[in-house]
Image 1: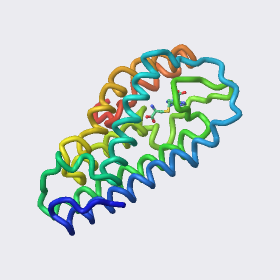
Image 2: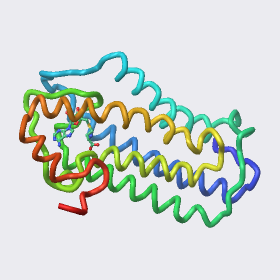
Image 3: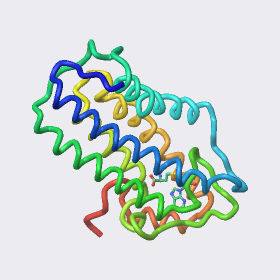
Image 4: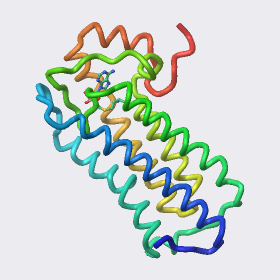
Length: 203
Ligand code: SAH
């Protein structure tokens, strides 16, 4: 059950908007994640660092928001926000879901839950990947910001942002190293013409 907290209507509504956005985000992942099954993996970099980062991000992106939505345990850390913040919050979460969905379409079978390369891996440089190398991470960042705006709670609000940041900072160079090892100059040239999560404006 969704708990009401201190400012009943806005908080309920914000929780509902967040809950729907959360459901859409994880449904996209679950639906496209099925393509990953049955792939033959030729390179996998699933070491202790990667496992710890994934466990930490699961806590902040899934466990803490669910505890906040469905139990009163985090209510001690609630604060209040003006009710208009629901609008920018909803727009940010919807944009995050749209971007996440499009990135999954563009990456297709090349998506993987951890750092790995399949025997049928191709280098995707079209769709969103034409402009940025990491649209899924961009979408996740957007979602974490929407979460801060929609959940007025000192723990549940920033939990996704705080746990996703280390994954982004530590995994990204390793992912790009792996892509260079697989695609050589193809990926290096691709890096020169794209941004990580923001499109390159110059050159
Ligand atoms: N970092 C990307 C993809 C995340 S999924 C994003 O944010 O959109 C992680 C997997 O995607 C990696 O293990 C790698 O195998 C694959 N990958 C990342 N970029 C790719 C690309 N441009 N083309 C094909 N596969 C890619």
